[in-house]
Image (cartoon, rainbow, N blue to C red; front, top):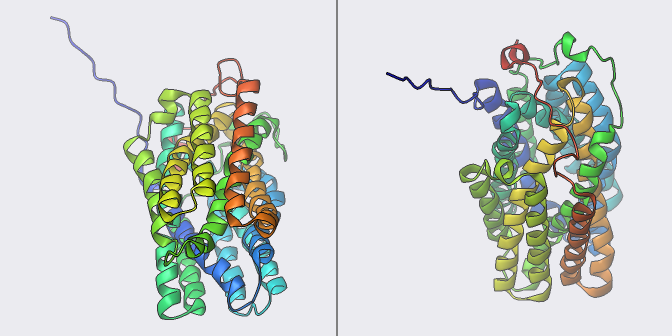
Length: 404
């Protein structure tokens, strides 16, 4: 009589993986609290205009952009934990500076420090997520891990707007500081997560990793418009006669959370190329709807379409970049790829601030739609994610080694 041997699915949701995710949730909720608070603080108490809003919101990306590749190198040398602890701590210290920022230049300076914390924490956390995932489940791992980010930017703005309305901006800064401190405390409980010595036998520790450049460039085009959306939708919602953008941002992040939880394996099943194309099409359409349909219903529908596009994009792209290298170079490639994320969050709001000043806030969303369409052309032209564009790495340290 024939017997069927059951093959266990490699474990993903380990205790260490969940601890990393909890630290990410606390950190990105702190980030979410700042989303509506910063534009309102610049335009209100500081008396700044659209350009000032764009500069303040995007300033953190300048330091993060230059530091992420270095952070990736340190992640491979010193481990993931130390980057997460130090990054969350620097973030908290920078927001303490917001308490004393009485002018736009001072706030910009503090945002530059925020970018330092962002670079360290993000690279450490993403490298940890990918280390702890079986090779065939890295897209799924990034989907689950990114739930923390979108839960944070969904819940965080609601917390921020509520606290500002009832107590004031100083209370919002204090909430963000507390959440960042929780992230640092959780990260301190992790193992060091240094790739084992035999995984670093090649001796190559590259600051700028070539395997991260093309995925990073496509990431830039996909996130540019979303960065502008997050920066200007709190003010655009007020322009449309709405009471605030908290519900819109909550819906946006809720859609991303739903797709990345219920459909966590979609990026792995679709493949990077197809997932990227679909995501860029939806992102471009969603931003165009927001810019052209200048009514609350247009904002809601456009944000929903954009949310679907964003949900599909980043898990596939980061998994693609990670699969092209061994574990000892994973931090470096994540540092290189994610540096383009900072470039998008920096240049997006800053450049779109000038667009808003010239043709109105609705124009920022149309400009983002055009950039996403350019990204689609780039994916098609280069064949990014198709077989032959990179060899997926099946070699990685065992979870037991990472957790040791």
